[in-house]
Length: 283
Ligand code: PDD
Image (tube, rainbow, N blue to C red; front, top):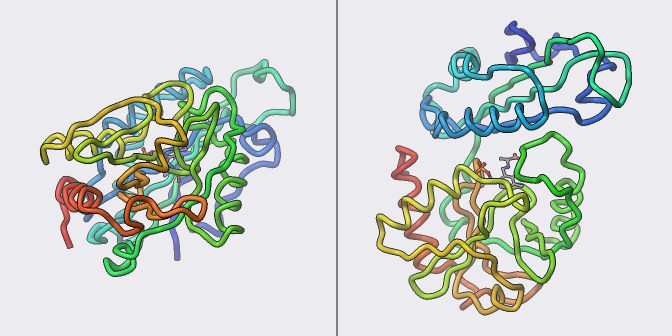
């Protein structure tokens, strides 16, 4: 039985109830986070906390998420996930429950905080070694995707477009540039140089992306943070997506065209292994 956290209480999932007046439900008025836990240890909690604080302050939701670190650890415990090689905790914070008005509630209400934990089963290495395919999708998201808001309809449609095309991931393209995935960041590799889109309002500043910079540096690769054109993307030697639970996911084909040799490349492989080491586990 799964134990979840809702507004200060740990309850069986079946007993967790949220009002139909919740502004998350009515307006998508809130933020979320997904934090990985490698054998019970939260990966880069400080960065997740900072990103939540940034989102909450941009949305003007008055809530201090610092105390949620404890809740993350408790949820792992309640769900016997402390020893799991990779688990995750999902956090969802909305402006709260109030009669439907577009403007903020006139009387302040408490935010709704809902969290749950689960186990992530990493694909077997031989599946990973086959690589994954992607399609490009026109990026129709709003102009503040740097905030991790719960309004994810374009992301849902982007990922579904990939599934409908019989592939695994999407790559958002906009103004001739390859930007990021529907639920992950996107990197290309040219020789010993790893390239990814700069942080701006156009991508989510991924915590895995950030961690990869450290891994790449340690392994002696150059990191270039710049936009890449779609044409350039098709010339790349290698490509991969990064994210919480995506980890480092090799992209070997885009829109039916092979990336480089069409096989997982040595840089992606080295970065994945380096990432697993940084995350504290290598299997
Ligand atoms: N997705 N870009 C987008 C659009 C994302 O939704 C995510 C994360 C990332 C990678 O960020 P990070 O490395 O901090 O997980 C990039 C989460 C995991 C999700 O929606 O499930």
